[in-house]
Length: 318
Ligand code: TXA
Ligand code: MG
Image (tube, rainbow, N blue to C red; front, side, top):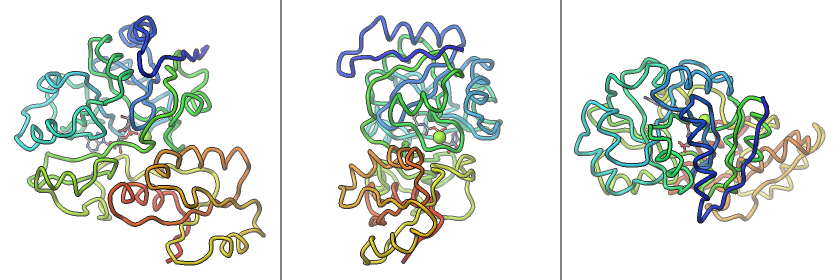
């Protein structure tokens, strides 16, 4: 299959390009498009065959459920059994935006989307291009991150192309994504809501709106199926250094194994999130054997970054 990249104006998305994407979605094809977090690989969430293609293109295990993206808050009502008060409060505060909410699913959501679970993950993204594609398609769009399974999430159209060329017909190129790490995922199906995946919207911010189980994603037992897979990993080994020591010292220790690279030293937390996955991919291209990165304080966005780093790391120096 020929993979076409269509550049689109980020601020004023051209309607004909939105339509090009929407037409493919409507006919059961896949389209990769930017969201404010990472690029997503979308299909009509109501079309089982279309959703199947997502799993094939990514090489994604069938037991890992997808997030359903909507463009209008009203769309949620048909996808879930009920919208509890807590969900309403979170939606009012954080949608559109990088928060995914898990609720009990309605019958119309195909089992392939939820990997057979009786819950469904829903998000209304903030990115204009994403919103317009969903709206123009006229259906909710199931979309995981648009990487091959096991690779870091894509933050540019180039990353998507590297992973999915010949496997999908269209990539909508809206430039680099703003946030750079995936959405916060919160489970509202349990008595006390839990964060399953930390993200840009932090535990601290959510706690101001509703009561949640604290630091739950640090539990060993995972409820989010996706979190059990090896994730976000470049080929290179990742060494996270929390200890107050010069990173050059650590670098020297690893040089006997091959090329070593210190990444994102002295970057702000925001820029670290934005560029982390790009740096991982870059290091692989440069045949780096060991990546060294300074650990961040686990607060705010730092929590989400450390969650990704700890998963990808082979060693943490404390
Ligand atoms: O920012 C994001 O969330 C991006 C953009 C494209 O929206 N999407 C994304 O999707 O990161 P994905 O599939 O790469 O990650 C979704 C995570 C997975 O860990 C999955 O297991 C979890 O959400 N998930 C989805 N549905 C779930 C459910 N019903 N119960 C528990 N976890 C669920
Ligand atoms: Mg993913």
